[in-house]
Length: 432
Image (cartoon, rainbow, N blue to C red; front, side, top):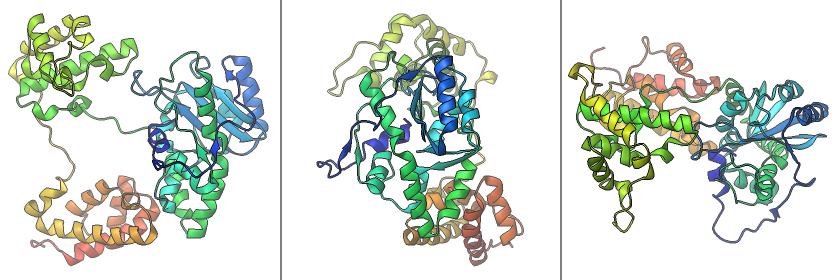
């Protein structure tokens, strides 16, 4: 189950559902595949099946380090459903061979593709029912809402945020997991017909083709700078303490295979970085003053359990930074190659601001007419980059090339490039 799916499972109205609830798979809950012999049986059955293959993966986000899969669900016409334990069977190469070039069907594919690739599963073709639902104009695109829309049935919403690294997995969790692929291909068929009727299927197919090469979000430079509460950190040495504490926490989390936030919350980490304690007593006092050190009612909580357990690690991290020369400290901020925030455009470049507003207005009008979220028409960052520093010459060919280089799909380029060229023509730079 993806993070996006989990949220979608809870997006149904609060009132009593009017749809019949799908409570169990038609063929029952399959046994978990946990050894090589059963894996080969699953591969043979899936290979003998026909049509698209529904896939899903359950992770333990918030519990374990990283985003590996702890359960993989597969269903195909003629083969039934299979639940595979990728911890017991870490190489799903036989399944990959069995699927071959068949189309995958996933919901919110970007959430599952990286962890599926880790166990040897990579699609040749896919259909994303979440992304397709956005293009089709559905008001709610969580898995449960999409199934309700196209099939008139409702899924149970329990167990979406449980620790899927638990072994053995409880039977109710397995029922929940099997249901996630039970009707996914049928949803795909109806959604595809809907997209075709609306004239949007070519757009969707381009989006799905691009997803086949998706390997995960880009690796961030200095990921520690995204620590929540970083805005409280003012000077370079405190910034260096955030970096050192973040890296220390990450090492501990990796070794223990738990989520870094469970080792030490960001609020506590930042408070240590700001206060720079050098003794156990000062460390305890600093964490007691953090947001995580008080309850909602303002009462003091005991220090986080990791403060005492890793006391030496936290204090050593602070001392290492205290011993750094000024020249070795990281900059307080890092210049980005991205355009400035949109709120600053009117002051910094009124002409570029006018261009952006014109294109945004036109994209918004198209979005409302076609019932597609405006962010799916063109990634907002792509639009800002091209309009902040337009290519030269600012003709359709150059703009199209710039958008394509950023990653826009052909249908998006065809839509946005003429609007961008017109906006640049309507609002030329004064020095040209």
